[in-house]
Amino acid sequence: MPKQKNRKAIIVLLDNIRSTYNVGAIFRTADAAGVGKIYLCGITPCPPCPKISKVALGAENYVEWEHISSTWRLLEKLYQTGYFIIALEQSSKSKNIFKIRGFKRDKIALILGPEVKGLSSIILKRTALQLEIPMEGKKESLNVAVAFGIAIYQIKSVLFNKGNAI
Image 1 (spheres, one colour):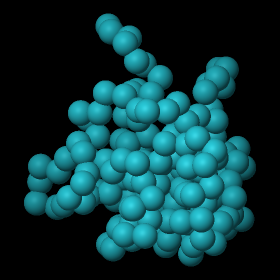
Image 2 (cartoon, one colour):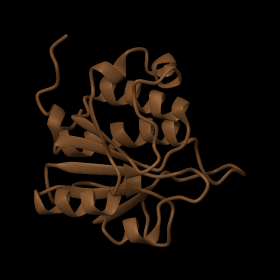
Image 3 (spheres, one colour):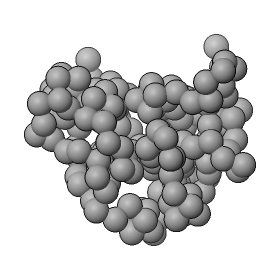
């Protein structure tokens, strides 16, 4: 199967995600979705790591990645190089991810944070858009790796299928 032409159009930033299993699952989904690069920021664990490899099933060897200590500095650099920065976060400014119809740019940086505390205000103020997945049950959020899977495919759908009707 040929690789997606727009592989580098979407990058992902993981800000202080502690779980090696979640990181591994995100690598695996990122490979499947054609993500260009993953930035592992702050205390997010990095390969090589047996727990990441156990879940990623080798995807950590195919998706480009880099560890960055300062997330906010990376966000500023990405903004300056033309990335549209999106946070997947529940906040008063969040928009329903399924109601988005387009983006201002074709280069997307999607940032995800820790499950309990979420992304800090320092990070959120550097984003152009905050998206959330609507919750209908008693729980108010999803596991970060599951949320990433939903979000990445929805963002790809909006980014690459503009105007394509069935």
